[in-house]
Image 1: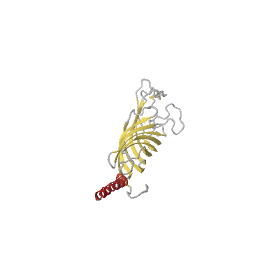
Image 2: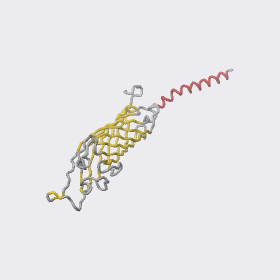
Image 3: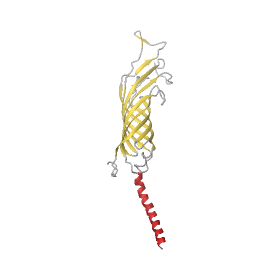
Image 4: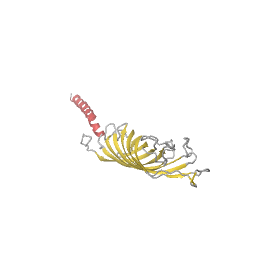
Length: 259
């Protein structure tokens, strides 16, 4: 009789332990803190997209960036970025016909700095899974944003021609544009990966639409003035690899996301 009671007691103890573990394990799974911010730096390549280039990967030049992010929750974040790089392009081998430029090829190089703010949305909650139930260490994301870009005066090189246009006894060389500032709209997509608990790796591609046609040094190459904010304007694309570090831990005992 006593042995049977002992068996029943043991079975009840096991069942009670299993029942309690259902509630304890989620607490263990979310033992790590969530972080509100990320700061980091990135390296990559950027390419001019405009009148003289329609290939997203042609003529890519180096770029570098510093990044800061405020994470509203594991799915959404606001990101601020300052990036610096170079752009180049050429009218050589361009299939589109342009007055003067097809017979008088030119190359250009310029520097570019942009300051942007963007909204990022992760397809899955991003994290280790120990700070937020259901978070994944790998997630795709997309981004939408706006900002400003600053370009230096393009350095233009005109190729020598056999029959140049002569004005006042000198070969005619069109004037090129000076440094410019323009608004930017951007969209992009990429992948985020948790390298360690507080270390993140982000690979992304972004497209930047500017409101200026002066980046390549030539405005309205057809000689017809364009109207509209983004009509016949220059753009640039970028590939970037960024490493960020998590900062500013949320209070573990607070249940309000704003705390």
